[in-house]
Image (tube, rainbow over all chains, first blue to last red):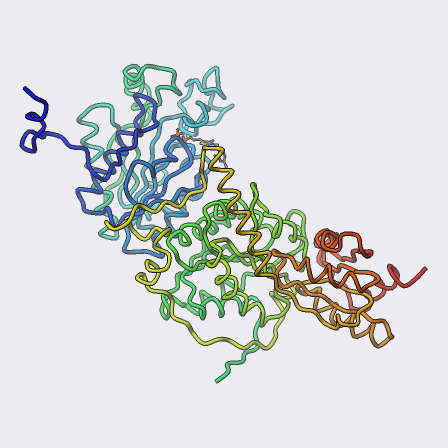
Length: 253
Length: 361
Ligand SMILES: Cc1ncc(C[n+]2csc(CCOP(=O)(O)OP(=O)(O)O)c2C)c(N)n1
């Protein structure tokens, strides 16, 4: 059978969304970023938001997110994405605006911008990739690094009391009256991927309905930073990250 | 009909911002410029022109809100005073690197550190030499009156958009706080979304429509070759500004044997010094840079040829004097006179300094 006979419209069971560009992603095999990028692109396509959406990419491994999703983008300084998003959304209230940030970006250097955007009811979506480590700079300790977890700046394991405690920023923003939907998901199984897509869609719908900040955390693997194979990293995440960062909706008004 | 009002420099900034069709202001309170945001909040321009005014959680946030708005092709601005402007340096270098237009007002107070709330001109280097990391420049305008505080808001926006570069209005606590008569321009409409797309649609993030590629506002470039080329592009832009945008005022310079160079409130003081000197038969002129970057190098160099001495007068320990010296390039002696820490020199004091440097001994 010739391949041309197989590739036919009626045989298609899965198709890459056209909102995702053809550029080969720079991520390490096993990284969660690429999966979440795809979900964001699919949600944008399915909701017909390509012409309306402005994304804000962070400093971190996903700095080049603008190469992968075919919408207008602004690239922020480290931690400042929610401030940029505020400026964009306040001046372009009819556009759909989201930030996409790592844990160092969102919960260390950008803590003030994160909390205050969430506290001002900024009508934006914040997507938070929590891999418990600084991926881009080579595996240093992050605000979300677990106690005992090794990183290049805590090579013998994070010691709370000395190195600080892991910060549950998602629980903190859930306390703020400005957030309308706060959830924590993961992408370790096909079911979890589908669930994450569902909450992303809900977050964007909230914005269209002018409901304030929707905050979506995705607990993620960084197998290079964690120095594990992709499969092992997924297992490690389930065993160690999920008990500390339990999955599910934290707030849904 | 002309609209004349008596107001503070800071209030004039706010009024002019509304009237020239500014889309957004983001700021954080600090003395001696808090009247800018206070005036805007009291005027409630969102009810009239649709201008957005927002108090941010810090100057770091306000400059980054400016980044976001500027990236959409909007006319956005912020204002602060020295410690707050230091916090904005990260945002400013990103804005310069992303080639975004915006206006930043610095109503300078004395430093270093928390310093004083009294006026100073000690942020000159920070304003004209870049301020943050990397090779970049801010278009820097120095108002010397409340009228210029008002007029320079629109001028700064025009230059910022012409060059897609951040522009700074470098004022000080004297000009910000003093009251003078000011003529306000009539209200201009803000640009519509369609006009913005028409004018800036090739770069601004207005939403990626089918008929164009996505617009990306960024300053990151990992290829050294591309980064060097981009820097060449920036330098060409700054060179063009130096060739085409120099602004200055010369007072009694035609027959001057001695020259004062001063900007902002120091220039107002030196204007009186010129009168005092001339009453004593000393032929003194004043060159007042209006643009600090681009600096009026050529006019100062030309005047150096006819003068026996040049005194750079600043409310700082001596910053602009370095640019005066570079302009003069050794052809005549250049000295600095400054008071700082919030002290404002008197015209007589400046005359004494001129005499002791060039006329005595
Ligand atoms: C002001 C500033 N400080 C530090 C850095 C260096 N830096 C780049 S990315 C990063 C951390 C990224 O970690 P995270 O936000 O968790 O994202 P990830 O790479 O893991 O996706 C740091 C510290 C920077 N670019 N800017």
